[in-house]
Image (spheres, rainbow, N blue to C red):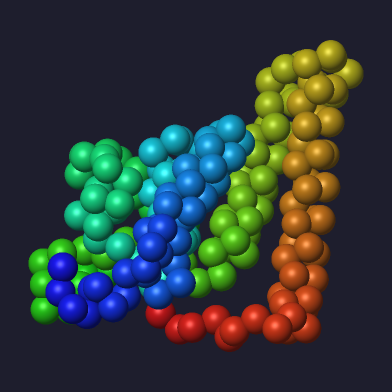
Length: 179
C-alpha cells in the first residue's frame, strides 16, 4: 500500500469517509429491491453500483471487480440497462475502453421513457378490442378498461413529470451537470 493509500484508508474499510462495506451492502439491498420490482438481477446490481459510484460511471473491468462478476455478466447487464435507457456508453478519452454512464436526470428520463411505452400499450389495447369482438364482449371490455387505464397513467405521468421539474428547482440540490 502506498503512503497516499495508507493516508486515505481508515479502520472499518473506509476511505475518504466512504464505508465500502456499507456501500456494498447498499448495492445488494437496492439491487434486491429493483429485482423484486421486475428488473433483471444482474442489471440491478450493475445499476446500483453505478448509482453509488462517485462519478456515476465505471468501466466493465471496474464493474466486474466491484461486483465480483464476470465481464460477460457485466456485458449482458449493461446491454439491458442501455435498452431501457438507464445507462449510456462513452469512450474513455485516449483509450479503447468504454465507460458505462448513468444518464443525467436518470429517473426523469426513465419515467419519461415509460410514458412512451404506455402510449404504445394503450394503442395496442385499443386495436385489440376490435379483435376480441368489441367492447361489449368480456375480453373486449377488459382490454378497453386496460387501454383507458394506460391513457390515464399517460396523462398523469406527464403532469407528474412537469410538477417534478418545477419542484426540483425548490430543493437544495446541485445543478444537473452537462454530459
